[in-house]
Image 1 (spheres, rainbow, N blue to C red):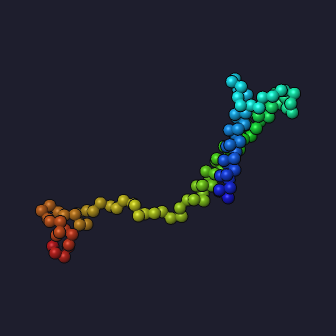
Image 2: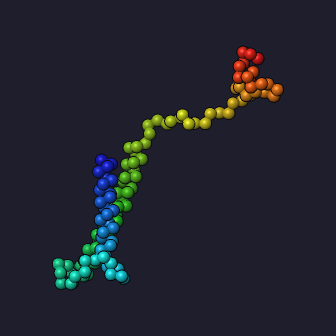
Image 3: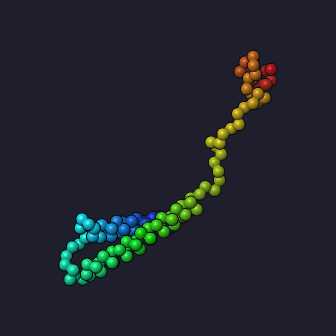
Length: 112
């Protein structure tokens, strides 16, 4: 399910980029051009592209939030790995050599 939604998200993103590039800007954009007497008038095409941009941008944001929630819910570890947890520092009674004591004597309590 996650992979399918990720693919849909990529399609929405590509469609959003395409629709934005098709809009007429001050420089002319990458629009199809042509005469206004075509299938849609220039104003109708602008309204359609504006609405399409709004819908695709909203779908992109909502899909991003949904995918983030799904990723945290489904892929969260069930247990905590304590293998890298900090160990408490050894104390004087825990094997640290006392002043004037050799390390071998401190490591072997029977020899002391």
